[in-house]
Image (cartoon, rainbow, N blue to C red; front, top):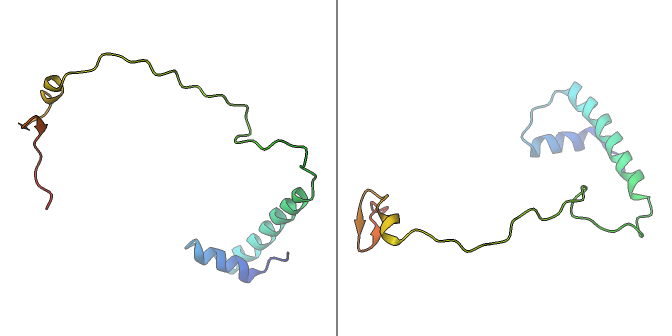
Length: 94
């Protein structure tokens, strides 16, 4: 796929980037090189490569849930400035 300066200007417009004519010429060449490299990668046979979610071999690092005592309603409500009918009283929004 050939990349034109018009394509680069279109992408810059979508990205709301201001680019000079000199930058457009520079970015056209750079993006063409990147796309050429990606095209090379797409020609590789990956049929025997397992898909992965992450490039590093990461494991779930979460600890298991363990029930623990929690605060009572009275203790929680004691932190609020105003309480009404067992709830925090807040100003109306509408």
